Amino acid sequence: MVIDTHAHLDFHQFDEDRDEVIKRAIDAGVERIVCCGCDTESSKRCIDLAKQYDLIDATVGIHPSDADQWNDEVANNFVVQSALSEVVAIGEIGLDYYRMRHSEDMQKKAFREQLALAKEVGLPVIIHTRDSARDVYDLLIESGLERVTLHCFNESLEFAEKAWARGWKLGFGGTITYPKNEELRKVVAAAPEGLFVLETDCPFLPPQSHRGERNEPAFITEVAAVVSDIRRYQE
Image (tube, rainbow, N blue to C red; front, side, top):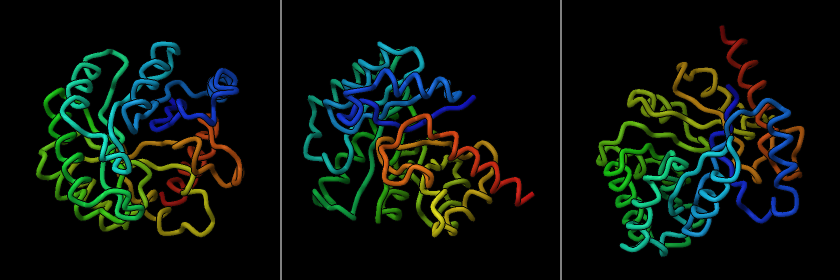
């Protein structure tokens, strides 16, 4: 089954041709698309899309760049939304020390409390990490959660091995197709079966043959082909 495990089809970049984008994904063999929330409004939009399209699942979460949105009212709303059949995970949540739109303390509070929420409602988590791997790892260990996907993985092989030892999954997307990304391809080659997933992060990070274009779920096939080639070569 071909699954795009991380897409943002609710974003405005798809407002003019969303139906066509989804049709192209189906024609390309994509069977499921996970539309990931990153703030209160996008989480709601993802749920609406999941209700509209059979192949779309939704997640709800507050991205670290929007950590100032997190409060008790949002938490309560996420608990209610998490009970919907359309919602399959809490995410995208995490820490981002590259953009630093909010303080470490604010980001950590929102992240820690969303991890606790995921544990309460029994859903897996989809994690955003940028320049923050050590703190993300520590807070995940603290949470005790086991069903974890590290979205858009771009860390070292050493960190990947620590994640795999915990049973966490890594998300590989268009960046693995970029010629200069040899270190990440080493991670792809070493990944244990069952401990990685494929994603587009559309409309961002298109694969090499579509650089400069808007990314979309149909392009997951190029990611899948590169992953297959890398891993076949290692056998």
